[in-house]
Image (cartoon, rainbow, N blue to C red; front, side, top):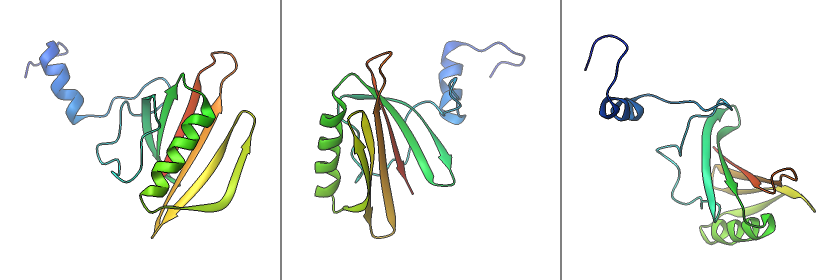
Length: 127
């Protein structure tokens, strides 16, 4: 590696694999390397980033799809992986919050349509 402050593109890409890069929201860019295989990715969405909180790992996504289609698809796929819906559910005309549990693992999805951009913002939290 070069000494000093200059990096070639190849060296920069190598460093991205070793260190976390944060976006303007304070999220680590990209998917967590250990995202559980039994938790589906929201359909037709792009990962914005992730962070670890006291509630677990929060992974944020963005989509141009219809929010209730995304939620319906996510619910079908997570329940087919053995998760059971918890009673705490809050859904209205603009999005909502739903939680599932399997063994000791809890998964939450929060989804909302943004009126300014027409995009749908999604946060999947798991512990």
